[in-house]
Image 1 (cartoon, helix red, strand yellow):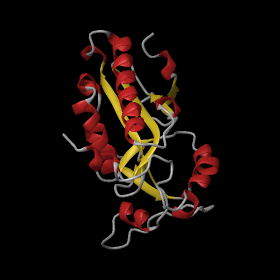
Image 2 (cartoon, helix red, strand yellow):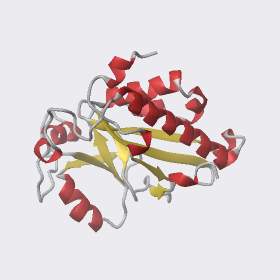
Image 3 (tube, helix red, strand yellow):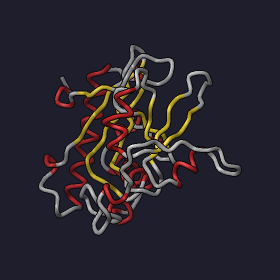
Image 4 (cartoon, helix red, strand yellow):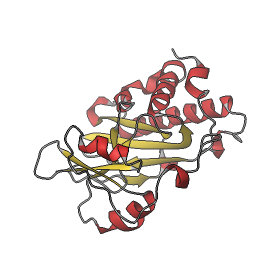
Amino acid sequence: FFKIPIIIGFVDFAPTPPNAQTPKKMFKFTGSVFHPTGKSGHSELSECIDSNLPVFSEDIVEQSGAKTFFACGYEYFCHTLYRRKNKRHVYEVLQYTKPTKIYIDFDCARSDVAGGEVQFNGMMSDFLNHCVEALDEYFDDIDGPDSIPCVVLDSSTEEKLSRHAIIQVTLDSVLSVGNFVEWVLNTKCAAAAPIVDTKVYTKNRSFRILYSTKKGRDAPLQIFDIDTCGQ
């Protein structure tokens, strides 16, 4: 479907791409927040992206489906700003052309999986195993698939199974991440297709942050123990 060099040849597996700046040089670390001014001809999002800071979005409680955007350094966001929020409906905007860790959105209605959550967990685990094995196969510097950390977050409800997985390997853009996930689905693990959402690799996608909920819902993203998969 995709040739391997197109998918993985863009960047090294390391948390920072080779010859690239470290995160502290890529982004300004600031003790304040940039809020868009609403300049004529510029959207809130484009103003934030132009600030060259990490960009975040937040659900507007009073407006259905609407978001507001702001930008600030990761240190200030994690250690100060996010801790102050009582109601968290916050997302990071994954900027399409910037280096991004491999992220995968698994979801389906509980009624769509005959074997229930156990089957869903097994399908997710199989897909993640194929991902790290492929990375290990094509990157010489990786010391075996078990050396690649993977974090899984859960926000499942009584009606829907929903997990976000983050593999601690950075590719050069959201496009590269989407190509890699599509390639694994088409060549390694087609059985996981019903639960892998491939529509999340679009431009400037808002990806929900740990402990945040979608507005009007009570299912915050929580750490999921991936070692329980298959049990």
